Length: 592
Image (cartoon, helix red, strand yellow):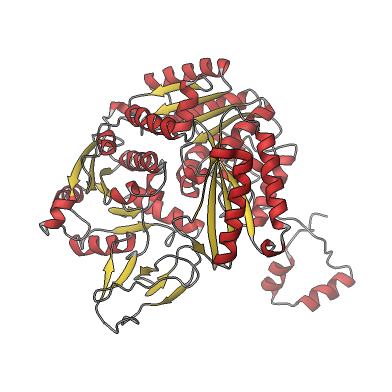
């Protein structure tokens, strides 16, 4: 028996230079015994705490005690802490307390990019008591995590994105929703359409657990619930190590563009700060919330713009791929060399994306090591980790990114953050545009000066006099809240009502218009003045399907079960009509 050993069939064949036929012959003679053996992808080493938790600062200790008191009164609590105040360290102490009580913890983050830094930090404290769950893992690995959660020895901590709320738990005691304001928590397509923050609160209620919502820029609905006494509130108003919040300097690029003083997307002031940071061996983050090289190409003579054949959007130019791409359906085509409308050859690029910003940085600072973090460069799990690891270790000097770079990343050498075009966020036709713009700008500003000295943020805009810009520079979240609540109450938008979007899609615009008119008429018979529309959304055709939208406003006291019953009945009756059978009708409750 001592000479018996296990070996994989493939490894044995490779080691001896044999074949499958020889293996089978030896099995028949009883020399080898073959049997299936399951090899798990998850770590099975003994659970140990590799290091102790770090001691909390005085402000963090105070917040920790206030959280314990708040949870005694409210099952849901908001930890409103400024950027770099050490919210994660408070989470770690809460997690340790829960594990000591024999409870499990679900730790939600909005983006996969956040799990890399976070899991490294948590592994050092909790070892293999922690599991990670997100869509970049293969299905087989996610199945194993699911099965482990059903076993007698499940993970004590699960760190994951929105889909983690569907994992099974045995003794859930705490759900942490980090960066709770992020719209990434809302599942838009495909169904089921749900908001992971709201689902997490319901999940915790089912287990009798607590929910902790943490952020520096709370969703206005969340802060409203705090003000109404529905949620508890704990505030962390100072950064860890008493480092001051970054100084935000506004640069009016409208005047600079008129005087032709802009160097591509950079103002002279931003270039000056970048140059100083690079000379001091510090790092820079540049935020531009649009990927690609140029959002559109236009004929200088007649104004023709190449558009997607499947969607009502212009094609984005990607220089690296040397092609035009639709960001809605993925359609691609070659870059045109002449205008098909007027035969002109003067085709100019309008606007700039992260790819063009990267080119501009290379031209101005050829010595600097530059990396770009957007959907095009982070399609795999290893790509995320590689970009962040290089920036963390100082191999990269300048990091250019979309909203991925705004979400809770912690880099100690970043001294300058550049917001290249604030106006692109302000001019979105949505009642939440100012709220989202404030959140994005405040979060990306918080990446600067997180350790020893105050960082600097250069905010480039053509609208420097907007109240929102002043609120960003003064870190005035409460001012934003008061102003936005007045507007929303006046026009009856959340949190003073609940919204339901009714989407209708069809390949033929005429059939869709008839369907939308019929749906609008029937909805008004039931809901009256609560109905807005039907209207075409900003992008009125995607993947060959025309789109119409109706907005239903539901007051807080209305019976949601009756609303649901009426909406499902209307959908069923319209879909039974012969003309509308090939249409799509669906509802999005609490849309983002």
